[in-house]
Image (cartoon, rainbow, N blue to C red):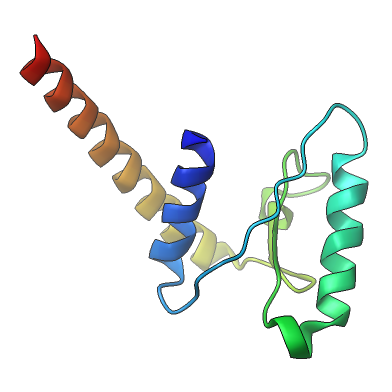
Length: 105
């Protein structure tokens, strides 16, 4: 749950005007195929559901393909900016946890 909260906070920080609805695909086999089918189906319905993002791991050819809106991978500059912001958020979360640990000791 914490991982999804962190991913949502990074997404909302990167795209403040959007409030994402998230589908999480889990399991041991077929996650990539199921994610791609869902993405393709939702992109087909783009006019009614709005922009569709897809976040996958691992990537096949390049790490930018892990984050897509529609069928378009995130740009290199956007990825660098979002990555820097994600690191800032992670550092802040670590500092908050350390402060909470110190306060409870």
